[in-house]
Length: 365
Image 1 (cartoon, rainbow, N blue to C red):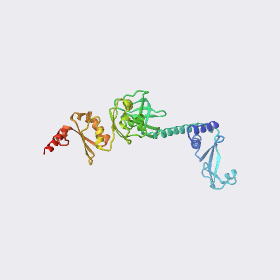
Image 2: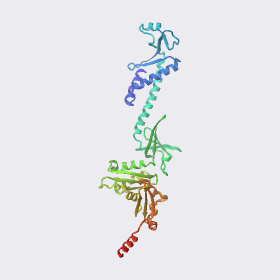
Image 3: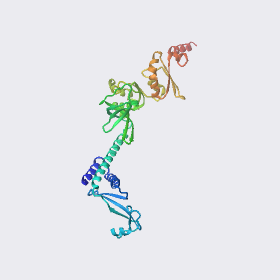
Image 4: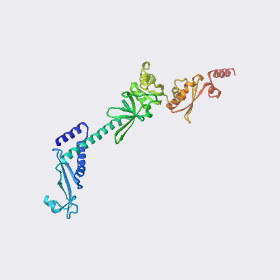
């Protein structure tokens, strides 16, 4: 057992990165508990693990005193001198008390300690690997599901996809390969727990980074994302280089790049708009595909009034207000949409016909 244990400790140090010294300390501590438990001993003991021979010995530690009151903890000066004349009062004497059949107990205890430490080390390695991947995208395989989670196999660990993070209407079957966004990695008593999402806006951003080299290398920057998972998303992009078309880069030739992302998200519609620091331009772009006539900005209340042609009103607002809602979330501006006729009636907007009439009147005067 001795040589086998030493070989095992050396292997674990090399392959698992677990320090041999730490393992030996843990084994010695466990053997002290095993000795006291199995041999009903309460004295102060020390276990010595010889790292050269692999032998294990147990030593009782006793204080040298004038008068012994507890023989399990103390030794008289006279008895100490029989062992070594140099002992003095208050010295500690170590006496070997290794039981005859302690080897079997030692082997079993060592195995338990090593197994536990290996499990802890592997959990630590997995945690370290995935804590660095928070807010990143990863591909996993659907293993099983219950009313709370879908369990996604990420290789050495299972991730949890909560019901609230699953895309509406999306069906998952065993062995499906899906891309998920890692939202949280935390330590638990059962090992690392990894929570993932299919609805997080970060998933959309990472997918664009995978499909659009210009985003990955920083030529095109994703400024903002607004998402209603499974239905529709808006993403605002910007390129510092005026020669680069950020929207065209994301769309790709014949729409190939964005279509790959749409397919991954099971048909979720994606509007790609050009970002601008000018709220008039940005809000107008964000309401795409609707055509905008004018944007009136209230800087103090961070609010805009957007005027659209009458026939574009329903398109600008969107089904159940979705287009306007996503545009407001994307830009960070409140958006109030008015039709051209309503705006003209309230004096917020002067149409082309009214403008021409006004100009001709001025000429006559």
